[in-house]
Amino acid sequence: MASKRKADLSGCRILVTNDDGINAPGLKVLERVARSLSDDVWVVAPEHEQSGASHSLTLTMPLRLRRISRRRFAVQGTPTDCVMMALHQILKDGRPDLILSGINRGANMGEDVTYSGTIAAAMEGTLLGVPAIALSLSFASRTVLHWPTAEQFAPDLICRLMHQGWPRNALININFPDAPPAQVEGIEVCRQGRRDISDLVIEERVDAREQPYFWIGFRRESGPPARGTDLDAVARNYIAVTPLHLDLTETRALKTLKAALQ
Image (cartoon, rainbow, N blue to C red; front, side, top):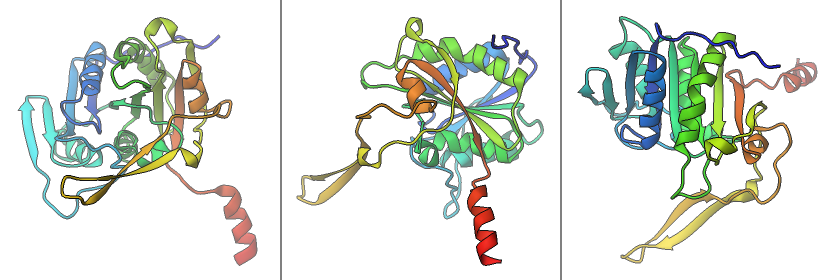
């Protein structure tokens, strides 16, 4: 039976961020989750939505920081900028013990992790030596999002993860299924999946001045995802927990190339 032991985070400083922006509903949910765990919660999030920003930095223009309240800030920049500003400026006299990124409006599974600003914020925290968890909510209908599912299950899951711990060069990626709390089947620890590239859609349109423009998007999965992956777990109404490694080296190819080229 899986361990139910949990860490007590009441004395921890928690940094909350996202890529959907300071006014995103998922950020409000994650703030409530964080405040249910600790009284020392700080929010540093992008001023505007930064979905798909990945691990980008703002290097060609100044960063603007807006203080909303004592522990709540908006940054005119990317999720990575937000984590950097939080750790090196806002919280430079007392680093956080945990970074929570999300809750993203939409899943971050499979190759999403390479595009996601939600993942990137957690990645930056990991690089800077702070344990980090990315949280996302899957949905099929844009009019029905099951935020209560994430809010109900996240606190206990975060505490269990923090009790167990994970390697310093990894982050934790959590995806909640598109289901109300009563229909959640459980938790699965699984590997990163991969979508069919045919799911990519580039839609061409014409604006009012008869100039073409394009939208990039993705179709819904047409076939069953591979078993044991985040895509499969969420499709079966499980909460997917995936540890992601920051070292992108392909070790098998490394050995082969060394033998061939040295």
